Length: 345
Image (cartoon, rainbow, N blue to C red; front, top):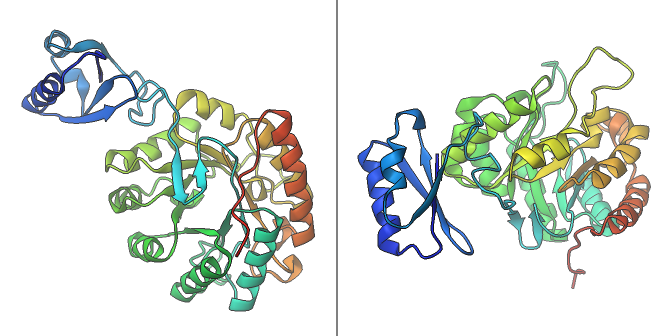
């Protein structure tokens, strides 16, 4: 339920509504806006005496949010949420950020070379896994804390924001110490204990769609983070599994406008995991920008043929530079632009 206050409502009116929601055994969530305040109600609103609340002074209307996800719904918040993970790196409004880097942090030389290359080409944030969930227990699992330290080193040298994955609650605490944005990968999209934990951490979270998840599933997972008081959630389409083996996954471009209609949260696209094929990354990244994505994630490695993970879907630095050039042209054609960082001193 969402209580919309009149533009002329007094602070005492807002406080009275919050007190009444609390009296009925629920938690109020005031959301001041440019012209009026809305007050969300957290809990099972089927039990709320909304008729009484509607008659309180200063109340303009009471809206019943029909979606199973509440705080993620566009009805709850009509304007777009803007998530800033670092100064100048904003998702949901304005220029489109490009996040790029290798699947895994492998060494100091590798991550610094990758960071310099993507920074020079136009990326504003660096992706790279310190903790890697792999299908096989014998595959490279990442460098752990050392990987996080190397990502922090790359940030100090290049100014790039850092996006990296957490696999469990302890890992999330470590990522929060070293990175700007905590990524929750596809395999953990419905790890509800982890979602609650990162919600309590309050750091920006990039939540990837699960391998077989519906859009409804994705938004309900986001709701777990929002319900803990963390509004800084970025959603990500990264492909879903289908019967067709022509590509690693089916990159669902329709998810971008569908989510943006249903939710106020930023929606970004990862065409690298979405296709699993290097030759498909550029056309799908172009299509994602044209479809209105709030950001692009791309895997880039100095030597993809030597990568310890996901080399087949990873761009060479020169391919990434060409992709950014093309994305700038496509963004301009739809009245947008790519985000940029200030030139290094």
